[in-house]
Structures are given as structure tokens and as C-alpha cells.
Image (tube, rainbow, N blue to C red; front, side, top):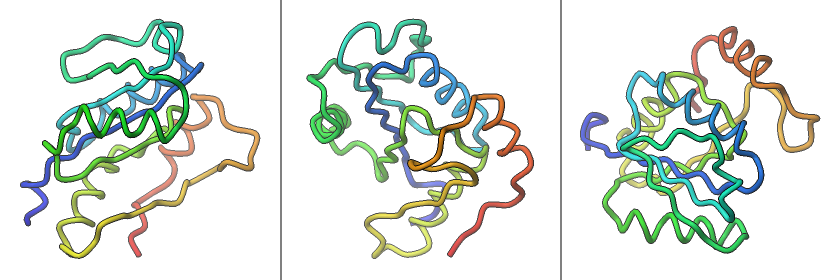
Length: 146
């Protein structure tokens, strides 16, 4: 399948981080190839307080729990997409992220799952502010493909 033919959806399971979720979604708006749809699964209204309600975002209310929330996203997407890209609600992406994911999945039809490496910080780190994360992304260079 050609990269251009791959339909990518992005899923966020979120709980208690509306401000950074909004920044993550905003960062997705600057993609060289935007996702076909964004799914946000939240556990209470405060989780999405202030997040812009745009036409390409599907909001899903679910009981808390990452597997439960991701399953709710998969059910809402109902197989309409070739790739479901799950992102943490505090993960800001390089502007070529979706395009790179499309290239990876189109390069080899046997690939079922892919993961990436963060440019900075990770689950063990103290975290970055949105401004720090944007600075890191701006200075990162080309994405690494392995």
C-alpha cells in the first residue's frame, strides 16, 4: 500500500491533563500529513476542559484505565482506519510524525506494530514544559528510521 493511501487515526486516552492534551492536539495540527481523525477518550468533563471541540475530533467518555480507554477508542474507530496511532496525552510530535508512521507501514505490509523513541525525556524523567518540548522538536533534525 502506498503511503498516500494509508488512513491514520490518532488516539489519546487522557485523564486529568486537559492543558497539555490541548497542546498535543495543537501540535498535531502542524503535521506535514494530518491524521484522518483524532479520538480523545476521557474519564470526566474536566479532562477535556478547554480542549477545542473541532470537527475531526471524536470525544468518548469512558471509565478510567488505559486499556479500557484505548479499547473504547478502537470501538469508536470501528476499523475505518489502516493505522491507529496511540499517543500519550503529554506527547508532542515532530511535524513529520504522521508522515513517518505512514512511510513505515507502507514500506512493509507485515508490520503490525511500531514504536518510536522520544527525542528527550521519557517516562522516567521529570517531564518537559510545552515550551521546552517545542524547542527540542525544533532542534531535533530528521526523524530516525530503523
